[in-house]
Image 1 (cartoon, each protein chain N blue to C red):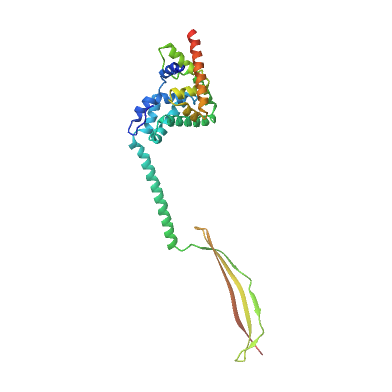
Image 2 (image 1 turned 90 degrees about the vertical axis):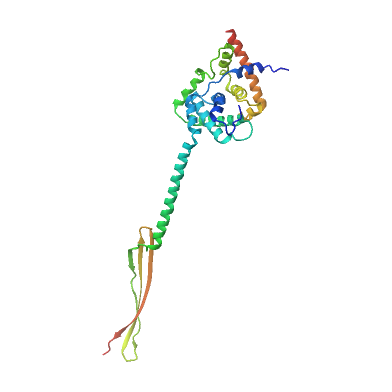
Length: 167
Length: 139
């Protein structure tokens, strides 16, 4: 993610990073609509209050997204049964643009099959551009645990791709 | 030593997450664009709060002013008079040769007033003590 300078237009910054933010938000939300809500809330908070802070904005944005997502989950838990059905789109809605390369498409499909705790580490590292130390802080786990989950995830993805390729 | 996960990580990074829909952009534009329009509600709120504060101050001054000028509108709601305590003394002879009997009468007057506007009460307690000489006729 590029630095968010004070004089930069939010549209340009969001056009560059919005998709990644949404994928990160999707890890902690039950539906696409919830992810959009979380991204909106987190991005507005970041852009208005945090973009002037020194350093790389990645961790700030991810923290803001995670906080918004957890708040939404807590609110959703108190809501009606209507909200419980939205988890179904986890399996049906693609998180990525369609890929012509079958290997990439297989990888995109396989990512969803990972256990959530491994998948969020992968997403935070690849699309959040966070280190294992930063991932550990975000998820309240040790860096070693984050790295371990990453290794398990890579191993699992490799197996998924191999199986799908052979299918 | 090469990272065995490097190629896989590169492949993952090549995936393109789906961007948020136009509805998100529209909502962001509403929140982040047009600082002039965003100032509108702030100004309106500020003006409203200022007017409210001014109204409170005016009301306070007005009521305070009225309180100083106008007398409390107390209304008599109760008046009590205690039974008189009458004491008769021995007759005495005055200098002119006539006889009188000294009498002392004591009683209390209590009145209670209320101002319904301010819900205040005023209790006026007044003890009375009178001394009189009753002329006595002698044959």
